[in-house]
Amino acid sequence: MSNTESSTYEGFTAEERAAMKEHAQEQKKAVRRSSRADKAADKAAEEARDVLAKIAEMQDSDRIMAERVHAVITASAPVLAPKLWYGMPAYAMNGKIVCFFQSAAKFKSRYATLGFNDSAKLDEGTMWPAAFALTEVTPEVETRISELVKRAVS
Image (cartoon, rainbow, N blue to C red):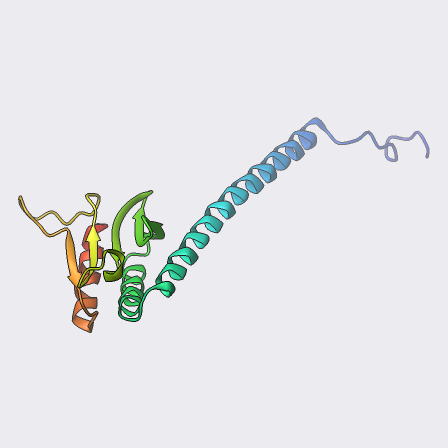
């Protein structure tokens, strides 16, 4: 190599080095964010699988109702995250259980229960229902569940 100005490589300028450092930092931050998001997504997916597995273990009539309730809740309020709560399928928002399904067999009851916790926004004056007995999930019941769940998370 000759010593002429046009052929001498002096390296990157200070601005170029600063830009590369900034880009490297941005890349590291992006990796950390996606890593945390993947872990949260993995946890949410695992909790949803646990709920579906618990539903699959239920007796016939409870299982059929729980499957329908699960489908209605997840379609009506996608902000709710399925998770197990005291061994029951439940649905949470911001870490707080909003509603849950309790099979009839769980406490040897004559009906299953769709219950709502205090985080559900179902208030009507000074008294309102917080749990509903289910013996069958008909299209009318699905509509009512959908309305209740949408209101609960509003």
